[in-house]
Image 1 (cartoon, protein in one colour):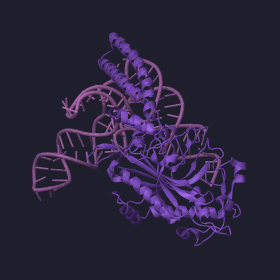
Image 2 (cartoon, rainbow, N blue to C red):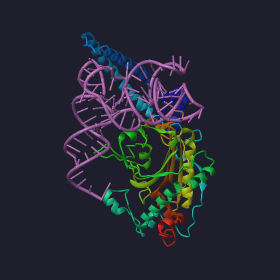
Image 3 (cartoon, rainbow, N blue to C red):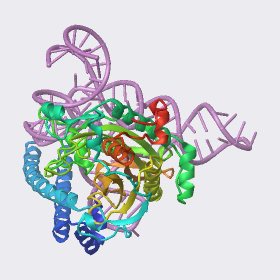
Image 4 (cartoon, rainbow, N blue to C red):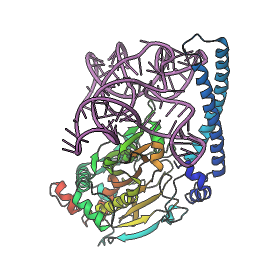
Length: 432
RNA sequence: GGAAGGGUCGCAUAGUGGUCGAGUGCACCUGUCUUGAAAACAGGAGUGCCGGCAACGGUACCGUGGGUUCGAAUCCCACCCCUUCCGCCA
């Protein structure tokens, strides 16, 4: 959430920028609630002081009936005022949480995702001497994907991934963990992009795949209506990305400055309900209820956070380039960056079967918006505490990445050439 | 899932209704002393919210949420987590 003090000082800007993101929030109402809440809080605290003072008078000796009577009066009045305060506070918090993060100045204005700006196009879509096939058309004869039997067991948007496609997935995972752990490579990317951040390698991490309502809500990532699966018998949700169990990892903690930047490369199966996407990308493994993903998550001090974001994008580009996939880099517009985001970048890879660039990567910069509600702080060397900044970014969503590899690397005889960087992790093989 | 024990200010602990708006030890910070350090001695130090330019004041926090009471770390209820044992299980 946003700092109420900031909203007080910039009501106009907050209203406008929320509007740009497609959020209609009643800022005057919020500020009015904030003021009323403040007044009630003062009353509550004054009454508590009365209660405490009254109780103090009864220490030691035996309680006088008059003081007990006084105490009872204070108690009932306090109960009333507290109830009022809680009601108001709930409204206030809901409205405050409804305010999205402010987009940075370089985020393009837009009303739909169609207004995302193509910042650059890298690589040439491959030319085929034949009509390129969809990944599912190639995968079927090679017996790499079985969706029919998966549907029998779990319904639509599930798959059995088989054989060499499994080997390919594990090869990509090894490649990513190796790459993000390479300090020299990171130093090179940092230098090339003129960034002021450390070259500290990313620590691989396997997070829980479920989390409770309270931290999930605080992360501003819980989307109960469209995305997130809820377990019926427990207060648990299936994570829709490793990001969700990673950004909540330091919930309610104050961390020493020496720990920063905290860089993780997380691997998790991700679960999404995909409500409202009926018929969309129904074939293949492009849009699934369950998919595996490697996700970067970085906690940093505020002054390095934007460069951490840019580093994540640089890493994404490097990874995609290494696999030889043609892509476009999109500067996401205000409507598409997402509620907790201050800035967002997408990478869309070329899918020859569809003849389109499709989203495979996202990089999100949240400033302190996530950390404020998650209460994740840094204790500076000076002793003061400050909210951290959070960044997350896809390393590879494995289903979509493999779909892209299959389509871009298809041969005339329906086989798939393995990208050179993955071959060491594929027993030296060059083809599926 | 069953049984027992436990969760206190970084760590370790004290604390079973008012003197705990939380004591002590260790670690930490600042002084005094010392060439410097150590030791000793003295002092300080948590997180949030509200008010204040600030010094500071108020308030809340003893796993979480409710309840009892004039008053709760302490009593009651529910839940979470940890430890040990049993059961089940990769």
